[in-house]
Structure formats: C-alpha cells, structure tokens
Length: 148
Image 1: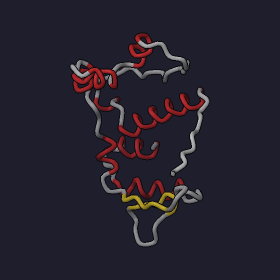
Image 2 (image 1 turned 180 degrees about the vertical axis):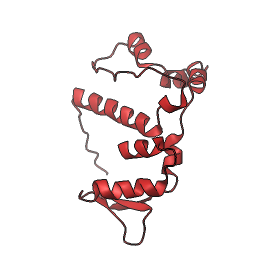
Image 3 (image 1 turned 90 degrees about the vertical axis):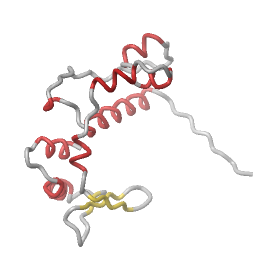
Image 4 (image 1 turned 45 degrees about the vertical axis):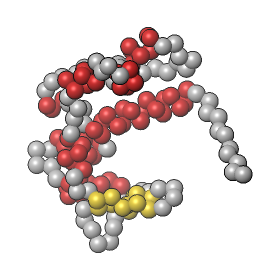
C-alpha cells in the first residue's frame, strides 16, 4: 500500500511503474509472485490458493477520495444506522458505553488541499490497524457449527 500511495503522488505515475516497483520490492517474498507472461499483474499466494491481480486501474481507484461534504451529508442522515456509520470515533464512544477499551487512531488534521487528502489505501490501512487493535484487545471465542 505504501508503494501504491507513493506512485499516486508521482505526477506521471502509472500502473505499470507501480507493478515494476512491486516486482523489485517483493520478489523475495514467498507470498508474492510475478506472472510469466505479464508485466502488469502480480500473484498473491493466499492460504487457499494463488490469486492474480491485474494492476490496471489501481492508481485511479486509490486516488479516489471521499469529500468532507459527502461525509457530513451521511452523518446527518435521517436513518440512524447510516448516521452512526459516519460518526466520529469520539462522538460514538461518548454516547455508548463500551465494555472494551480500545484507543483510537490519532487523527491527522483534515486539509482541503488535494495533496493532503487521504487515499483509499491510506483509509484501508487505518481501518485495518483499528480492527487489529480491537482484535488484540479482546478475547475471541469461536463456535463450531455441527450440521445435522
């Protein structure tokens, strides 16, 4: 994700350049492979099988950002579920007592400048980090289902 964000900041960054950086950076990883016949795709070895990803469109999708105005409209929704989904972490934690105390991510000051908007990759990374903090702060219990 860092390489993707870096390539998005380059004025003439392309999907193919990003793929080449991936090949250089991760060629030694056992979970990453370069396809034999393609220079614009990569393979991730997941627990179940190998999955090939085509790099075309990754930069364009990562540059896509959600504007503050859109988030404010969703926060003001008449549907409580939608409004709750887009509330700030501080507002949610003060209104509902929680049994799990998880510290939230430090929020970066919001700037309207195009250069400082969060990319999709950055938002995903922040969300994943928060999820991992929550999982590490709790004790998961697993239920085995028995089919009749």
